[in-house]
Length: 181
Image 1 (cartoon, helix red, strand yellow):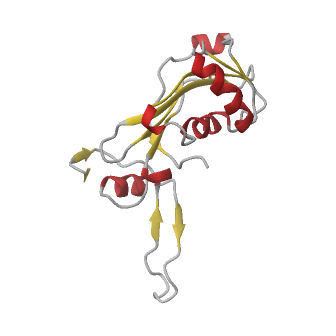
Image 2 (cartoon, one colour):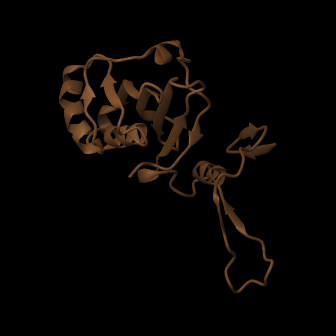
Image 3 (spheres, helix red, strand yellow):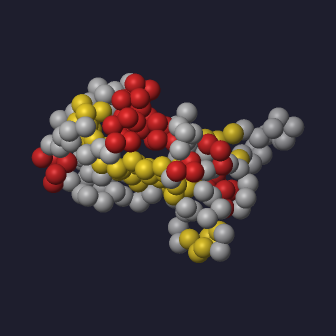
């Protein structure tokens, strides 16, 4: 158990980071510093480090079933407010992607958060056929521009396969990750 920022955490996540060698001034066999996702998250809560682009925390919730829902949120580290959110599905078998929701709070628009979230969603699925759920007037203007920046075309006619329809509607447990560039 660990106590971080007043929260009692029952078990830390596994080490997924890289190991950096100790400075050469230390004797052989010196302790090595492990840089993990976990340490970056706790650094953010302790007021150290950035937690992502412009000091924000990027949280990804993977699908729990193939073609299931996925979510990416961008949060302020000081209060956890998610000012940007993207929800999508991608089916590897049918090679389809569907953006079901994208939102950026007005005060944060124009800073490429939506485009960077779409870059994260499309990564590895660039050859898929992508679509979106019904678009607002703002979405009709946004998706052609974002699609050009991301390198895919987003059709405004939602296209779901049977795998997407039968997959879990809820994403899995969130984990922190680096902000897309």
